[in-house]
Image (cartoon, rainbow, N blue to C red; front, top):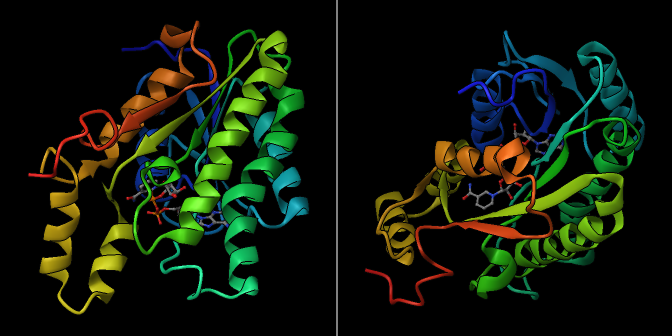
Length: 249
Ligand code: NAD
């Protein structure tokens, strides 16, 4: 497929996991793709790479501006950089809540703010935010993380409303548990990684983890011309967690 031919995309957190799979897929489908990441060391051609931390407004503005100049404009923003947090409200103090909100929520706000002037000049503008099933599922031991993703979901709807008349579509994907380096680190830190992995797999009705490529496919759909009539939605990519209302297998 070359449905992204002529389009220019920026993917935050694009050096690893879901972001990397998305950057690679958009490039394979014809887009010119820039990755914004705090650690873009492993990113090579054809992707362009820019080092920036989404908690630092100055570095985000500079990286988005340079990416837009190098790509000759921007049509697609994939707001994907994010970090995890575990525990109940009693387990994380205010400093930790502010740190994770700063990355997961304000990080997306900063990048969108820097990208919107460029997106307004595009004839095919789309923003896709990487949200999570945690936004709506009521997962145990994920209070802080879930709250950040709830905010991303609300932000997606509000931005979709604000920018629809500018011709900018805004949607999000809600993945279940995705097999990425992040989950690899989580499992490595568990007392019994194999049992933890089995528990994560069993939580999804399909009985397996989602692949990064499957999330990338959903993001590409929402970012591309085939979803031109779709804005303000959350697309679940979660092995049936939200839709089926089944007990896990
Ligand atoms: P990952 O850790 O494999 O990749 C995240 C990337 O974001 C890394 O390259 C990292 O360097 C970058 N990053 C992190 N903080 C940054 C910052 N402050 N500034 C710039 N770059 C930063 O993680 P992943 O599993 O691919 O997760 C990507 C997104 O998907 C996150 O928003 C996460 O919340 C979401 N998500 C993941 C899962 C999952 O199970 N893996 C499920 C639902 C949603």
